[in-house]
Image (cartoon, rainbow, N blue to C red; front, side, top):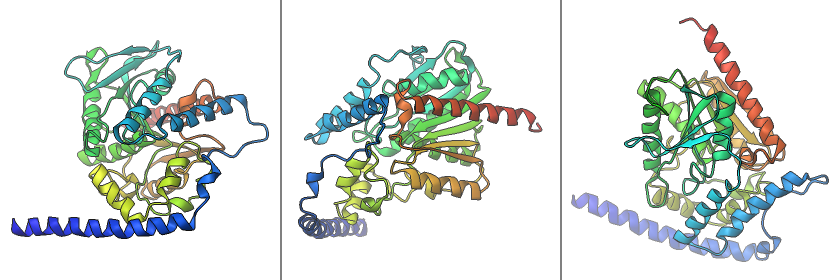
Length: 367
């Protein structure tokens, strides 16, 4: 016990010294980069023939940053959560939104007309693990239910900072076990299952399918990850090629890039209570063999492009059927802006084609 206390004290002493050194480096770097803040907020580079729909989307994205501007701590988190939920206000949802029965995982069923109860999609929303909800992502879940003729269960997993990062993962794992045997009408076995998610939820989705494989559970028929986070390592933040073209993530990452890497590392560990090198936080660093057919969508303008490409390449090398489709000049998770954005509708059409191919192949596989 004495050794443990001594180790703990040394760890904190080292952290304090590291923070002091990092602060000095930070001040020097700020003085060196003086005047950089005059550039204004990062945004996608203007196009000569920018569509009106895309301009509206960019205004909504900038509104998210404005909503949290000048706020800190809990106030900032609440502002982000409220803004994301408000993005679904006025949305015409064709699907029925239904709360699950008591004792079920937290979340909501999204059931389009003609959706079959035995066909189920577990959807994991994005929001940097601190924001987002089933409500904020109804544009996506409603569209998925329609195109797959499936009932979508949007999990309301526990968010940080009031919960651990691991708590959200546990919620997703429990939800997957649950939808295998429970549908919107009650107990019933699923015949078709998809795991899907976007951004931070895409990270949880990719981590979940590896966990399902390791647990020997019934695998999903397919997985879908929209602009997923696949790597939490915070190296070379300021040198990423799409820093200036990523309207959603760029402004935040630009600020983080000025913070010394050791301080970012320890801040991540203490805040998320998980090592950035853990496959739970960075699916790219896990074992990628034996995964179900997986589709990844990512914009060529966003900062997560390179790591998504690395994930697809590593998974294919391990023998897993992973498809990567890229779109030019789209914001992070542009699927949220359907039906306003034509490219969002194109993306959903592509998802529908992917699911049709998956089912066609499964019908021809020997039993």
